[in-house]
Length: 302
Image 1 (tube, rainbow, N blue to C red):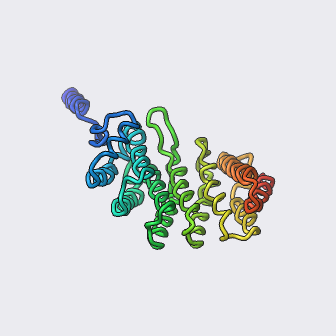
Image 2: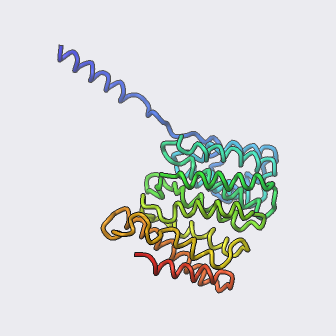
Image 3: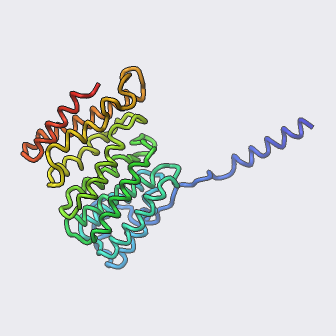
């Protein structure tokens, strides 16, 4: 009987071995259609009839979670960037694309591979850029984009950046890129800027992961641009920065005897340095308060 049972198990294993993987590589028909060098591909897409080109932009959303980085990043993202920077999409398509990407961002956890959220965020940063240069969103739409990006950034628990096998994910940096474009948008409202700063504060000093792929500089960029707006008085920056890890904050007492505390210290040091160097090097008077506050913040760290 034991022998029969063992044979049954072996037969089952053999059958499973012949089965296809549970998750096949996502298919991106558009990538197969435009197998061309980037410049030639962009020219071919620009030459498409307008209706076909706009439909292609909507169809490519599925490509953003393809497991092949050459498809996901090399084709889909780069094509989106070329389309939007080349003014190839009409406003209706941009609005529809934003809606589809926001749905993907809200359902980022539904992709166990971890590509959906980061690449929806990256393309949303390009969408936000189009509105910065030639406004087409109304205030509620812009605020909705801020809120969605803030929720995604705050809840993000997948800190994977780059791997040789998979390419980029980089959810923290890509959601910060949305904020950078919004911070540069002169139509941004202060209430939205406040939401952005709160989300950035939630990730700048995380103790869950030590950043190694440039995330602190990407998180610092929107803060730098917000410092150039008239939203915040000079005295607000020391308070905001010191609030990232107050004297009585968790993990601070034994900062050099805890992996979690050392991760937080590493991340906040990199964030503070990025802010200080950028603000100081700008030579702009309106960034001087941020530079001074950043230096004081760095000196305050354990």
